[in-house]
Image (cartoon, rainbow, N blue to C red; front, side, top):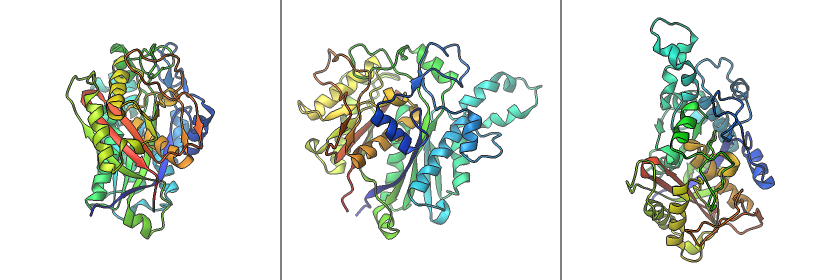
Length: 404
């Protein structure tokens, strides 16, 4: 019989806090982290809102205890801060104490620093410290540096499936545990804001110049964000053997690909529907067992229609409370699914449903509306967390209250 997969630790940094406690506090206070960038040199600096972590790269190096930050990108430093909190949260002083996996996600790796020296790199006559940033463009560079820093060596890999990247990292880690290849997997993702991604999404006309409005009739696109989040997954047998505190169970998961369009989902939500349905079936729960859905909810014209229709197809007229937390953090791309996985676990642990900020009017294509109020003391037993990416990469995770 396959092992159950438990979450025993979490760590994160985002625009609304530099750790899990600060994130939860901001969610409860309904304080968004959206604003204008201080650290990205872009012509859109004063026009396009972003969810930026409130620390300079030098300050992040200090927080990550990196004494010689040469070659350590903002992406890597965000990841190191989050992964160390996750390990500490799980009571793991030495991550190398037993064979473990590190499954890390990123979409553009160290692009945040490489793009600053791009023209220097192109000049073969130039020499200087900028050369140490050539290799960091590889998404695996930040993964390897985190593996070196934590001592995890048994199984280390990088996943890049656009906005569902860290959901797939969590799935992969859980599968390794279920198959008995490792007893512990550290899974998540890290992403830093870059001119490349800001210009790219702006070219696709997917960025709103106002703060994003998921599932709103007047939504006009997303706001990009940055951050990192990691969850410690452990087999039931390991968690019990070492007396670990279990925060929740990762009870179901599924990824699908409807191959509809490179940058747009199926209008009827085919991929999202299949991902949610199969993840729920794997968890052994039914639609009646779900109290909250943390939706992908980017606030783009296409996504919210597609995801909303998928929710209505799956749940009928009894869609559970749902909300997008991206108006708090911005869309953090590869880190988004791990950040929202932690919010899902917090929803179960704290018995709370987080609000969908900036909503004002129901979408004409849907019969449902998101939850706009913070709801405390709500009996949350099971949460679906959705992440859907370019290329038809759809992923749904089911988190369940731990029943020992």
